[in-house]
Image (cartoon, helix red, strand yellow):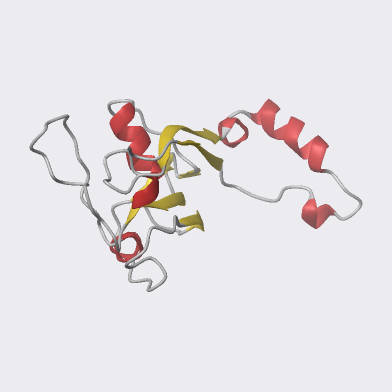
Length: 152
């Protein structure tokens, strides 16, 4: 992401939303700047140490932590996809020399996408006098938790 407010300072940035594309798509890559991730613990590994102009995908952080477990935020023709992203600057990346926040976990609330009884429960909670507001989304809701823990 070529954002001048991100370059040359340690100001944490978060970008959240429905990007309508997966993590590996070209358009998502343009937004993130495709930063390097450190995959193994090694004193010599330098990947992920600096990414002043990149944003890390919380989906990828969770994928690395859980060794392949994948969440999804959208289902289309029985394909599970992550279209709703949380992207964070290097201040949220555990292996960054500029880390200020440590990644704890991420989760996606998406039971109502596949379980009809859950969808009915949510619809009852959201029901209003105006039917167009009865069901606000066909996407799961992503959440990430970080702990303030500056790199010492």
